[in-house]
Image (cartoon, rainbow, N blue to C red; front, side, top):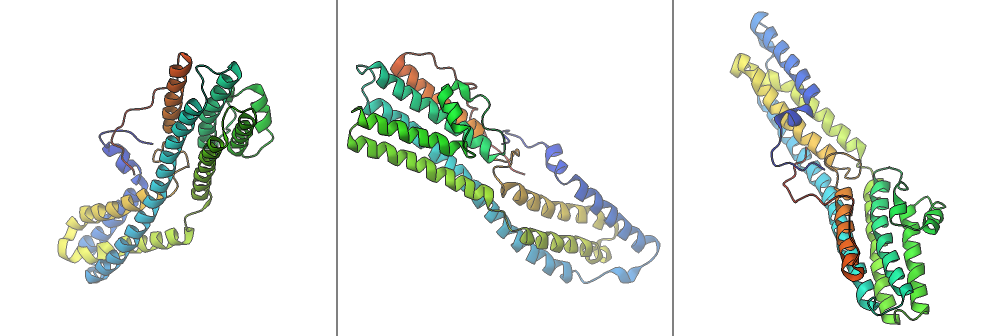
Length: 308
C-alpha cells in the first residue's frame, strides 16, 4: 500500500502512459487532417460525445464505488482482526492467572498468543498468493509446523490448533465453562473474518462489465476530437488529452481498487497490520512475562495514502 504525503506526477501519469501516448497521436492526426487537408466534413455535433461522455461518467462512478466498497470491506475485516487479536490475548492473560499459575499455564498463554501472530502472517500471505510457511518457526513449535503442513489452508489449521488447546485448558481446569465459550467465540470471529477476506479474493469483479465500459470509453475518445475540432482548431489536441486522461485515471483507479489482495501498491496493508498485531501482542507478553519484545519491524506511522 502506498504511504506518501505527496503524489508524484510521474507515478500518476505512469499508470496511463500508453493510453495518453495513443490519444496524443490520434488527436494530432485528426488536427492535421482538418488543418492541412481541409477535411472539414470530419467534424460532428459536440452533443454526440457529450451524451456519450455523460453515460460513461455514470458507469465509471458506479464502478469506482463498487471497487471502493470491496477495498473498504477488506480494510474493515482486517481492522476487526486487529481488535480480536488484542481481545484474545487480553482474555488469555485475564482469565488465566499467569503470575501465580503453573509453568504449563504460562506456556499455554504464550503458545496461543504467538500462534495468533503466526495466523495473521499466514492469512496475509495466503491472500496474496505467497508461500505462508517461511519464518513460522519464530512463532510456532516444531509440532505445530509439521501439523499445518498437511493442510492446504494453513490459517484454518492454526485456528484448529487454537481450538484444541482451548479445549485442553478447559479440561485441565485453567478456565471455566463461561471463559471457554467467550474465547471460542473470539476464535469463531477469526474464522468469519478469514471467510470474508477469501470471499473478496475469490469473487472476480465482472469482467464483461469492465470490458463494456472500456470499449465505450475508447469510442468516446475516438469521437471527441471530431466534436471539438470545428470549435477549437488545434487547441483540441491538449483538450482531448486532458479529458481522456481524466477518464483513463478514474478507470485505472477502479481497476486497482477492486482487488485488494493482489500484492499491488493499492492493496490493503495486511503485512503492516500483521506487524502492528505482533508489536501489541509481544508487548503484552513482555508485560506479563517480563520478556524483551522485539517485533520484526515497527508498524509504520499513520500517513495519508493515495490510490491510483
